Length: 108
Image (cartoon, rainbow, N blue to C red; front, side, top):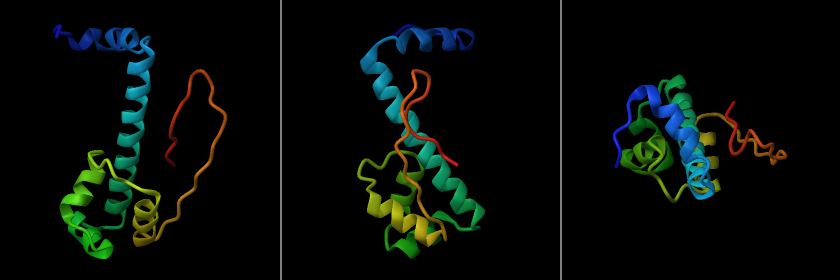
């Protein structure tokens, strides 16, 4: 793999994103990371440790860690609903039209 300086990373990423398969996978990972960060943020705002949330959900702390680091490949709607309920939240799902600039998930 070619070494890339920090200055050139944006240029390199723009080049890579021209590849449709790479762009698709990049967007999927970006969405997973955004969701993971949002879950971690809401948990922290609720003054809960990962282990506290795990107890509420009857899962392991490691599973919560996997969710919050976007490593959980089996994150289901049911799991998301259970997380939201445990944190006193709801979930909103919408399917807006895609523009050429924006894809994926919007977290609020």
